[in-house]
Length: 115
Length: 112
Image 1 (spheres, rainbow over the protein chains, first blue to last red):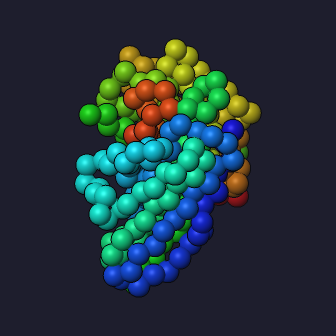
Image 2 (cartoon, rainbow over the protein chains, first blue to last red):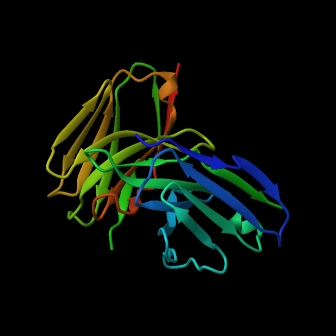
């Protein structure tokens, strides 16, 4: 199974600032995703991070607010821009289609609090 | 559009009792179904993946069943322990390795 790390693990930020979250995978993967989990809620997909091209965003999420980079097959970043308290969430990256059964694995998450 | 529902939203049982967690989905055209565990404030740990062609998958005290035609999966946890206390989520992708649609989760508390 893929081993995924995220930095930072948690942060407390002031409104109006931006935070970039890094996701590193220990092997090359085709599919990488970014999810958001608001307090007490389930996970919602933000976007699919595409290597070498622009990310594909889900309805309700836009590139200006959540720019994503995917410079290679093992690394991606998600930036949360111009933050407000409503952005306080756990942000998780995941990789898809691993192993014989196409299992998906998740990073440990980044816990963001916006004051 | 796929919708995934988990009932109940929360469950409290005494230690030793068996746990039964339910997951239902509206579109039966799924590639597989995964069950995850999430501890408070943490990421997701994959517990079991059941392929669309399978009816059952087992790992230790965990057993997951899948009935595609009725759009249901059930996760059984035998002889529950306090360490099983967590939120359990089910999720389905449209295609292999593709983005997941999650249920709302079932928060489980196992009392010593």
